[in-house]
Image 1 (cartoon, rainbow, N blue to C red):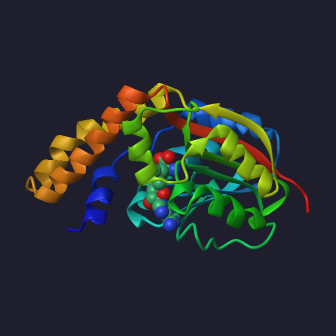
Image 2: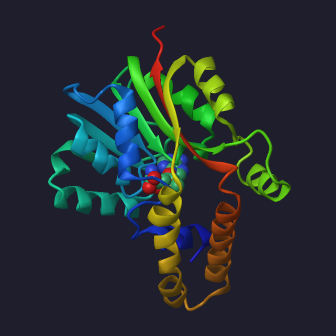
Image 3: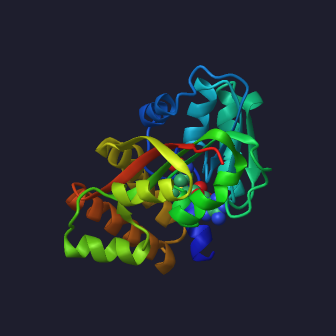
Length: 251
Ligand SMILES: C[S@@+](CC[C@H](N)C(=O)[O-])C[C@H]1O[C@@H](n2cnc3c(N)ncnc32)[C@H](O)[C@@H]1O
């Protein structure tokens, strides 16, 4: 099994594949101003197994297309959507966020939690804009520096892993540069990382290693994840996920 498949395997049965929380998705909905709107068409990009998709479907009157390029995650979303009685509002679509199958000005909103970094924040913001109606909403969470200066170890790690990491003011400037007007910004609280994401992942380590015969590759992946958790625990005052909600400016 290659490294990518191992990564899928570690995260397949998780409720979410990145930091987040139901209350935080609901806060983003409130900031979007869409709570009372009807007949919405929404895309949830890089939805994973759909933690955010299910919240959107529950709290908005919308048809939601949930896009991810890993079919195993989408299969879990379909099961959970059926279980929650939300299957009629959600369409799971296997595809790339870099070639979305939407037309121009087709969507009322695009959500994307912890996923836009895969194509890069600026490239994603620029490319996805055309699919939104004038006044449409973009709501994304993105790794963000919380302070102007950071410890060298943390700076070096994230600069290597994601060179577009920046402060909120940098991210907001990119949104404005690409024709969005920011409506709101907040930082995901610690429990979104520790209780909702890292904690459940750590509990899966033992069974994951056993299932893979304690292979070197499986150990290496677990070690890399442990290192990331340790960095977050030590340096959470300096780095987090920013949630950005913005409106497409007409034109
Ligand atoms: C960190 S996870 C976040 C998943 C989910 N939004 C959540 O918060 O639980 C990033 C997701 O982006 C998906 N992804 C990565 N690159 C992608 C691409 N090029 N096209 C579509 N999905 C992609 C991954 O499969 C994964 O589900």
